[in-house]
Figure (spheres, rainbow, N blue to C red):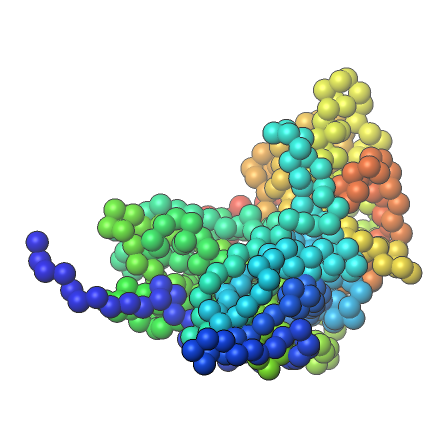
Length: 552
């Protein structure tokens, strides 16, 4: 065996300089005390962690980073963007403007609270950091108009909503962040189920590590992400990793721009780095998918991060993750100068263009008509047609579908509300005082795919409204039973609540909370035909990979 190389050390993920712009939250609850050996220690009261967490979770529910908003505006200004790209981008900007009012959160799925903290060796607390942070999550979710999404497992099969959105995912590390022993630094995230579900791990081999095979692989796998997580995405691809779980975690951090200052090339110290050339190539690859910002076009992604990590010679994990149009994260720090939180954009209206895309062709659909007449109208138009819906919708999602399936199993008929009305897959956030609805955007349609054939055969779910692509079984069911799947824009939940939803009432299963069956009245609710009654599916073509090594 050859002699070992001399010892050297580099962090696996060298974060680089902190260029974030912060705002001061408070200078109370922190102090500097003298310690042994002339060292100075930063003391942090538990209430500081609670207050910082609550403020961070408030901000990321209502505000976005200026760079993200600028990317949305760039879509509208891009002459190569499709009309559907521009319409989605404009709706997301309008949504950001409404959410910035601090009442309606930008997305109805206000997510799992995720907190990553790095505490320097000269920072002293009372040791209850995780509890204090969890208290901050509790305060934000119980006081604000956010949604409780966390389920406590009572048995292997039974679970119940915790009613607080706890537990949070809290990870705390003992290390000097950025080489600062007297600093405590954080990343706060709110990760909705739609984007969290689009995290993928592939166990590959050395054979993947060449340009042609890599692009073929990514052409196939990235298309499978679909639109259920609300593009345009911030996409992260991680190649390598000391373990599968580390690759996945790195992808999540990269999608939040947390690793943007990594080195741009590797070394024998075996640290991770960003490959910016491959990032540009992958971004261009996604431009050619045709998926676009949900309903056709170029803007499947805002940007791409590609991270290369060291790996065991027998293992080559590849992790893929996205941050969605609700790009909810912020960094923070506690230092001797006070408690600081990333400055997000309080005035997104400055990114709104002076344009009106509403004059472009749109088909108005009166949902007060009998179901047969609604379907006859929809049958006249091709997939990708933009619609404006007005009238009653029934809202039902996972648990309600399971309960209705149990009724069919027992020989009961399909409820009339699913026969007579279009069904909207959604679950609202809390309703603010004086509003008809809380934030009320669509949920991922694919979770209800297994019910469609049976429900349509029983006369229900003949027009469905939600977000994301669906399986071939849904396309076949719609062709067999004369059904339609309409895509709603994923993301603008606050705008839908303020501008489109006029009335909300519970129809059945009130004990299920946001999972109850609701009846809502909508006005000018935007949608697109995705699957029609003739067997056409917009996403079927754009999700087929087109690259192959043999054709190069």
